[in-house]
Length: 247
Ligand SMILES: *[C@@H]1O[C@H](CO)[C@@H](O)[C@H](O)[C@H]1NC(C)=O
Ligand SMILES: *[C@@H]1O[C@H](CO)[C@@H](O)[C@H](O)[C@H]1NC(C)=O
Ligand SMILES: [Cu+2]
Image (tube, rainbow, N blue to C red):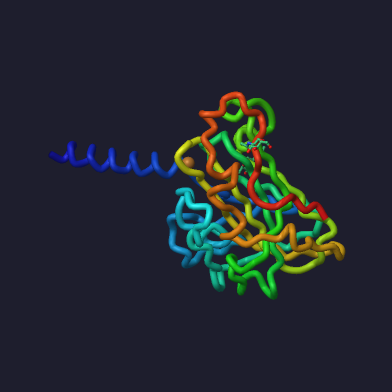
């Protein structure tokens, strides 16, 4: 009786772990050479102090117009626990994921200027611009090398550069993986963190580079609703969202 109860609870625990590690998100960052731990999902925000916005689940968002697409569920600021990373424009940002299980799909990195402080900003009302992206690197849709495969091969990390010409001020940075290994629905994995930029220049992205989340994507985008397995010889992939702004 005791053993079977223990086995049942072990089986349940393993099933839950299995679900958790099938997905994930950004767990930590290196920003301008300084290491920062992110929010610990599945834990209460009470007592957490981090530059990252709250996110509560490793599960993907599967609707491209979901209200939580900006900074994941629930994307809230942490109140007194909310920090921001101070970094010079032009610095490198490395995001580290958990042991990322997906190798098919693009990597996209966005930033947005916060109207005053980022802690008081509502992520869904920010105007986001893309600072980095990579999609299908080589080969065909189902068998080629994708940015997410490179991310996994590179210690589950992705390195981007903050445009050097951005004006100093407070910005949100948003890392997003779009996994398209399932043919029935896209899987979006966005996480946000807060930055205070120093230095910088006086160049800002114009309207055509700016998007809202939700709003930037639609289910009819060729890179969003896609069955890669039905197109085994296609060697192009259209990354969704605006063009990259490099300053
Ligand atoms: C690999 O990633 C971890 C974070 O997940 C980081 O602490 C470590 O420094 C990274 N290793 C290298 C060689 O960059
Ligand atoms: C590949 O390119 C063609 C022609 O531009 C386009 O119609 C199609 O949607 C692209 N395929 C993908 C998967 O983005
Ligand atoms: Cu997953």
